[in-house]
Length: 138
Image: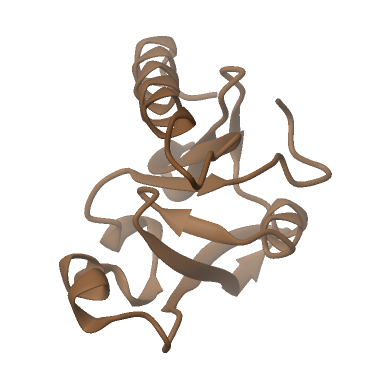
């Protein structure tokens, strides 16, 4: 489990992001925060959900998320795919942008494209969807 203070802070930030988008045409109804997490001395991908759940990102959760259209910070559409897995935990993932998107929309997020690992994750990523994917906690 992540630090209770960190989990609470990330959950609160996620709630603010989702609330901000409630009035927008996109109306995101669910999201999660992807962050770097130290799990017994190893860096892993952690996630925090709107309900305050703090989990390690597993292959099953990532595959469930792949069935939804995902938006990075609610701005640019992305596809997240597992790349390296051990013990069903995701050690690396690919962040891919929709090739049809205007260049100016992708440009601010370009550094996040490609393969990322927990160690190379530059900051927390807010991933938003219109509804909660099956298999994910609230």
